[in-house]
Image (cartoon, rainbow, N blue to C red):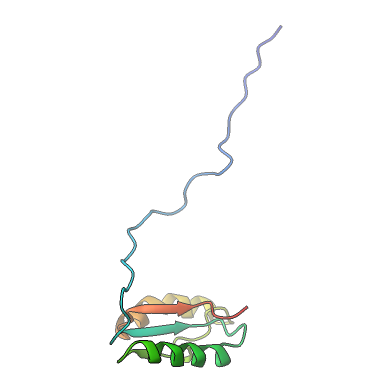
Length: 103
């Protein structure tokens, strides 16, 4: 009987990214700036105002940078919008981000 050898392949593959430490969560939104990101896919124009109103009742001094200021994160200029996000987030001094509203 001939012994056969097989090459073993890990089904999940190699990691394609480097793990980074996450920022700690914001514990209190009082006097914080919340930035909104949208893919304009499902009722952002209706949902974001509701979120803003609800959070303003809970957290005095909360501020918002509304989603149109950042652009469509899933539109024809998606690559450009995503590439510009880190700088926009820094310059708008976002303490937290709401993204993916709807659906």
